[in-house]
Image (cartoon, helix red, strand yellow):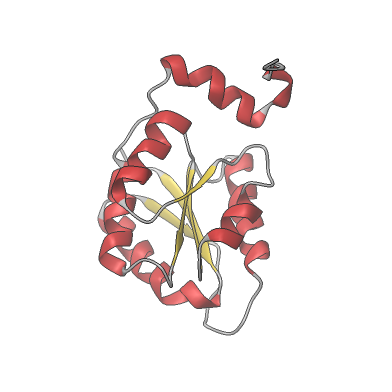
Length: 152
């Protein structure tokens, strides 16, 4: 089943973003490229926020966020309660992020991960469903702190 996937990066990840967008289109997904449109310097928070807004509005079901390390853009995405970004660098973490955490945004670092490994992470992420059951109440707490209980 094809997903609507938002993708964005900063300038350091512009080339990887283009390759991954093409890869996802080749898998039959609708890809919404939120920028940037070139390699001129930009600020990764602006693009992380764009992905989070696309998820929150329903414009996209999932997202792919990429910057030099993946750290900054994942922090920006995770500022929005509708977004659950997981920073990964190999497919097992990508699969577990979906299965256990219902991650809806995959974050990666272009200076950390190569194109083929990034594609393998995307394949694992997009090919895995949320496991539900015991994980559901934990995921609910991620987006709604009122579900959290004092562990003491």
